[in-house]
Image (spheres, rainbow, N blue to C red):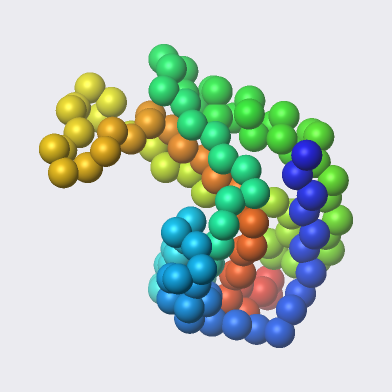
Length: 125
């Protein structure tokens, strides 16, 4: 069962948190859109899902919907980022063979990070 608690904390720089977690976990995530003043860092995995079947998008959606339906969620709905947040990666060309230096990737991989920090500039207007 997923338990998600969202609350506002003292602002932190997501990129700094991502860099400082290098030795603590290999499950790190950083995403930014500078033009929108948006940056998010995530650490650890509270949940993960992979799909390699013929309908990976539908499988990922069904798995996420089931996770959320059974989750205990306590959040402030006034916050822009409230509740669990999924991070997903998709194979763009599933018929293409992986490069010899990498390991094969699933068609879809979704993660719900154990800890997630958006930057303070992501507050609603």
